[in-house]
Image (cartoon, rainbow, N blue to C red; front, side, top):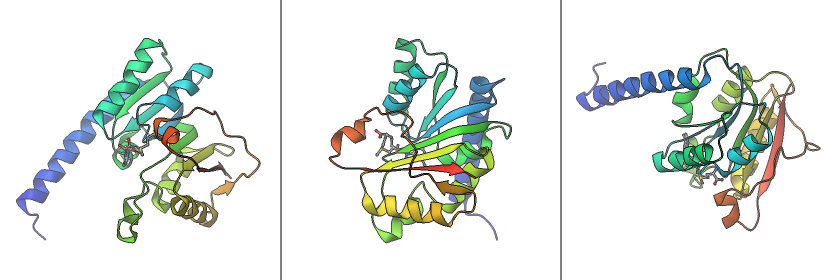
Length: 198
Ligand SMILES: C[S@@+](CC[C@H](N)C(=O)[O-])C[C@H]1O[C@@H](n2cnc3c(N)ncnc32)[C@H](O)[C@@H]1O
């Protein structure tokens, strides 16, 4: 099937974006083989606080929105945290280009956009494919932490985790680090889950 001109242009833009992202990943993570990863990190409040308390771990946050990423990078420079990095990236593209040898000790997803309408559920970041991709980069005992104010999205995540053979919900686990994110500060109630890689 022939591609429309628009589609072909979009694919070329995506390929160029991924080439740049791959280069940035290599620059930031050269010589590093384990990270703490936050997807949709917003202004980077949570990861900055975590990185400050865990200087021995390399922390990387990504977000789609450039000015949010810049806020994170400013925090990083102000506090002089060499173990903390922020990148503007889309989650799927990031996981595609990240060097395969990089392992995730911990993945965090805080207050992701809930996409409440059924026809938009496929836009949610948490999908079976994401759990699969994270499982393939996480060693036994590594964790995935999810927090949302949206009960249906939390239930969706629990169902996918329960159905996935490589993740087990750890109800006794402590939250890795309590720090109110911008979105958390707007919410009265929220739901959290910690899952471990089998
Ligand atoms: C509701 S905000 C929460 C931000 C932050 N985690 C917090 O708690 O304050 C969701 C964030 O996810 C980012 N986001 C949404 N889809 C994304 C994707 N596919 N890849 C990377 N970031 C994404 C958005 O740009 C936004 O900053």
